[in-house]
Image (cartoon, rainbow, N blue to C red):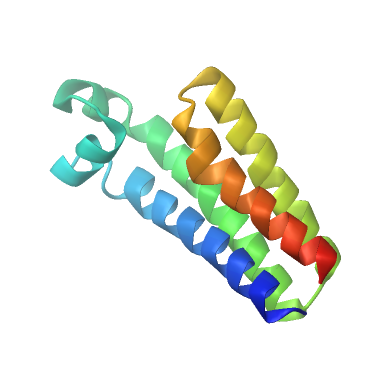
Length: 116
């Protein structure tokens, strides 16, 4: 596997681990509320939904790590495609910033994996 492709996949996995932490553990804290632009009341009322979202981000990170550790290109491609789809959907339904933060890094990594 090309080193650059591996690093890019690792960056996407790290991003999703950080999303897991933010959504599952920091959602109602000042840093979590600041990152997502939430008021305290809404953060408290939506914390179960955020934790569920965080769990899914953890599964995406786990799949990307699995692809890195196993060296399986098909696994990396599948999970990067999942991240891109989730990012595009999030951008269309929640906030356009999700496209830049989530889908673009995954797309760059996918191109690198495909070319390696």
